[in-house]
Structure formats: structure tokens, C-alpha cells
Amino acid sequence: EVQLVESGGGLIQPGGSLRLSCAASGFTVSSNYMSWVRQAPGKGLEWVSVIYSGGSTYYADSVKGRFTISRDNSKNTLYLQMNSLRAEDTAVYYCARDKDTAMHSWGQGTLVTVSS
Amino acid sequence: QSALTQPASVSGSPGQSITISCTGTSSDVGSYNLVSWYQQHPGKAPKLMIYEVSKRPSGVSNRFSGSKSGNTASLTISGLQAEDEADYYCCSYAGSSSHVVFGGGTKLTVL
Picture 1: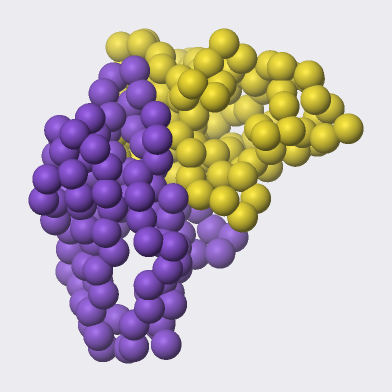
Picture 2: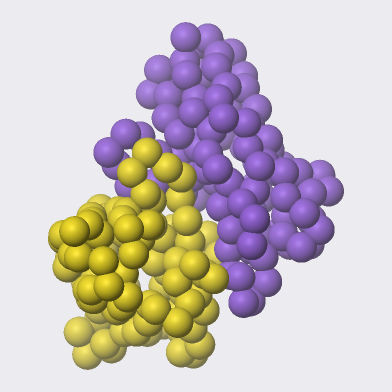
């Protein structure tokens, strides 16, 4: 059974950094495209970043230069390093198994709150 | 990258059919058969309902169907049931650098 479990969210001050983790089971992270998608409170879904099986990475303009997606093959885990956080980054962050740009499996999400 | 355009809300009675539209551009919906649809109940993670315009993942009811014409994709739900009440989001591939773009979401109310 495919399972994705995010962790690492919390309350952080503006300008701070946070690293989100997404532990996968039932499939191999490195053999799949993996995406991060976020949802601000009461708002819609916003794609954040993707890492392809070959290692290429892409980012939404809103986070480019501040966020970094990566994976640890030995731990079968996906990460999102978030730096220079802003109030507008406040959201639930989901990791998803991305197959041909469709998010077939999702984690339960982790809440990131950026506030002083 | 601009979000895809969806109606804010739609409604229907049990047993009826409804259609949710998703309008993009020739750079996303119009160029690729890579449109997907997601259902999200309050406080829950999204669930994939349709991928590659009209394909259903295993376990998704055949009451859900998808189509596309030009720059507009559509999700149709037939035989509406109370449990279909949720938010629905469309999503389209938009080229390698943008990867995907989501619609703003549509709230479905089952009357």
C-alpha cells in the first residue's frame, strides 16, 4: 500500500527556515516524480515544486530561490527546505506521488504557519 | 503562471448530473492531454478522480467522467450523491518549467 507521511511543519517567524519531510512506503521515491503542493487557509491548491526521477527540479515562481526540493534514496524520503519564509507561505503542505503530472497519492499534509 | 478558471460553485439535487468547467489557455489545457481532477472534503487531503483528461483511477466511481475541448476541460458527475459534496480542483500540465497549474476550485453542493 502506498503511504506518504509529512512532518516538520510548525510556527516559524518571518525570515526563518524550516525543512519538511515526506516519508514514503509502498513505492520507491527515486523512481517516481514527486511534488509538493500547498494550500493556504481557506484557499485553493498551489503547486510548489517537483523532482523528477532523473533528479531535475522545478519550482513555482513564488518560491524560486527560497525553497529547495530534494530526496534521500536511502531513507525513501522527500524533503522541502524552505528559507526566507514569508507570511504568504503559511499553508498546509502536501507531498504527492506525481505520475505524468497527475498526483496519484497524497500525504495527510503538514501545517506551516509563518508569523511573528 | 495564471491559475485555471473554474466556477466558484455549482449545485445539484441527488440523482442529477452536473458539469464543472476548467478554462485554461493554449499553453496548458489546450496543448496537453494532461488534465487531472481532484476531490477534496473539508480537512482532508485531495483525492485524484480523473487523470489524462478522461481516465479514472482504480476505485473511482464511473459516475465521474472527464472531457476536453480546446482550452476547456470538464468534469461531469452523474447520479449525484450526498457524499459527492466537496471541493473540486482541475489541474493541467503547463510545460516543464511551470510543471502544473491548478484551477481555483469549485464547491459542489448537493441540495
